Length: 200
Image (cartoon, rainbow, N blue to C red):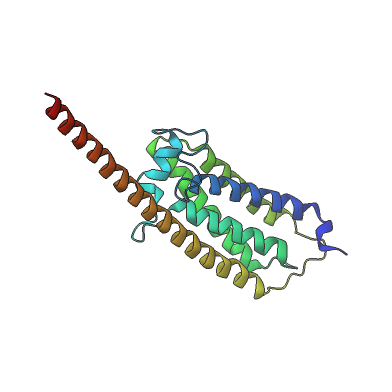
């Protein structure tokens, strides 16, 4: 029987795609995709969460949105490519749920609601429920596959490293551009002052 026949497969894939998409939106400003998070201006809940002290992983300063994006994308790849979903992967999904619950508590604690964060966490929790209530395909084996954890965690590490490097590159280019604009504005201002003094 075709593994894609089970509705749980499609529901799970959709939930992970939505979670990946919302994480991409949250990562967009750091990846140079847009200046502000869509639907969230400066000082909004999304801005407070992503750019506040809880927006980066302590010690290594990797944006939490990068972690979420790398995780959900890798989980989507593992979900759609494996023939079975092992108990090891389900345990990994549970770890992700604990992380989601922790960030929900953080949003409540700091009094800032981020709709894109909430969407990704909601999909993550629903995906865990799906893993408990149903099987990805009707012929899923009860055995544990070594391939699944390698795809998930290997993909996660590689994706996170790529996002981190791209984010750093974008940040450096942005800093260089802002420094150049500052020098140009300062030069124009100085030239204007000199011209005014000459006319006087």
